[in-house]
Length: 370
Image 1 (cartoon, rainbow, N blue to C red):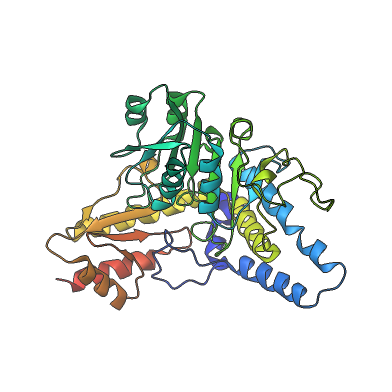
Image 2 (cartoon, one colour):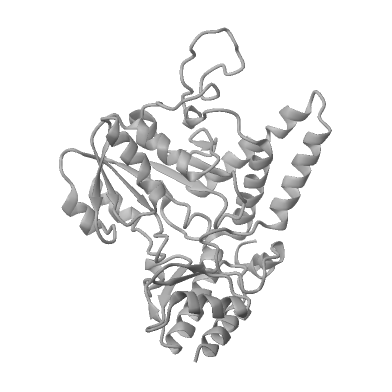
């Protein structure tokens, strides 16, 4: 489809007009609902072919993820996961030692794996204050730093990390990226990362229990398969009571079989993104964020997110001076708008299916506060 098909993109979805909380959860498409229902229905009438047939969704999803991340097209560098956190724990426990630079303000999913490895005497985090800019990372580099682990897009403000520049700064060190707040809507240089992990329940709109990791050759070489399970080995179907070698590719991060129903949902979601094209989705999201920004500023809102398109993704955080965020949220709710509410701010997050009418609802809600 690319840009020519974007006008039809919203037709794949049925979320309410004022839904602006995609950074928390992205309501799935009709494609995902259909794929899920068909897979689940097939499982209810199981015969000797059913399980093998349903398992074909796994390589289909891995192949689509490989194409979107720019990894090898055979899908051998991609493994499906139930969520992003599982991938971050795999990456963390794969590092036997060394210091890992981690933004102190990052989402906790990128904190706890490193806290756990440090407690066991393995990799130790060094916390970076402020935005993880290439300059800040350069200043924190020492000889003991073996990796940098960060979010591609900040969950609070939508700030997008400059992955290409960070790769240049860190050289041969591992770059581990939590892509959950940007994958599918931000056209980022994913091949700059050695580890890309994401869950499918937010911007990919594949619902819960879906996700994947994409690993570079460098990651496969350096990260120990500490958490490999019985499905992450060679000759997985050979039950000979012996320990098997770990799988040669990203499959070594598999702990057990995942739901083929979830795999079917993820495949449908990824393939929809492919058909429309990430640049087209990104452009529509940026337009809506620009419109929301103008609306908020017209009502005296203090914008906490970057204003330049190349520095942000689909998240827009703000506060109204002398106004409790809870009161702002109440007004938004009364006008059919769904935001995320924090103690000191309100977060709006728009997708390519978000219409201008959502912006109008925000305008009406803020006007009512006067």
